[in-house]
Length: 282
Image (cartoon, rainbow, N blue to C red; front, top):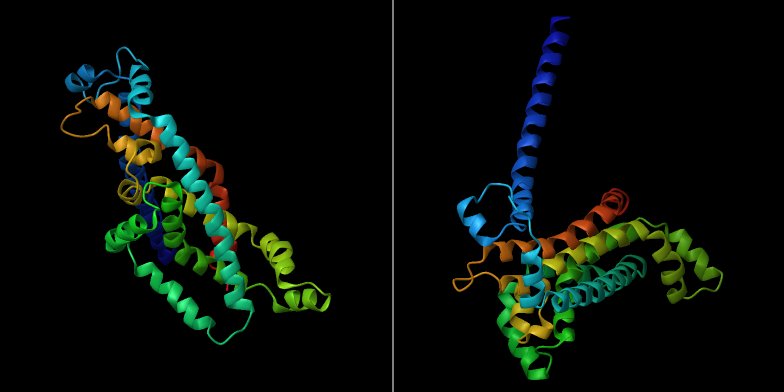
């Protein structure tokens, strides 16, 4: 009886600690975002005088200036193009590679899987200089294709690992039955593998899209004109020694952040479902 009482006390203490920790973590995470949001409706002078106070006279002037001076509409469309095209290609290539590596049964499949795994060790910073030289020499510098191709390349290693783990769990008998019925591998991939792999497709899509949407260094290095800049790069132009308008900077940050939040809240159930049913499936 005493043992049960002691166990309940320990369990209750850990529950209180866990909820307290999570509440503090949530506050630390959300407080800067809330501060950024309501500060974007304040003029620069009010921010300097009352940095933490709520706006006394809320205004949308910062948002008008951000779109007018920062060319954010063009940057927003570029971010959609970069993230959208690279995400679609990453999903299709990773699923096709996972299908081939796990179901074709050729001897060198482990070698290729190891090569893709090594791709996780390659960072953008380590290859940005040779990548810039290569794209300049072949005429891809300051083009949308020159941004999309590296996005796909850096997104494939992790996507292939996730896709391969899921497809490996698909019964071989299902594929063998389709082959016996006369289906070729193209038909099996598009009509069977893609239909079954919907959870992992959602997971890879969300992770790829959010990663590409927030990417800064590749676009900043591989593009030279404002017409090719993505949203994070355009937002960065509002910061610096020559620009001390913090209200304008906050507005630009809110514009860049809101689409990401909307996309995540719409698709977060798919992330959980994909990892639960696909990413850890053996």
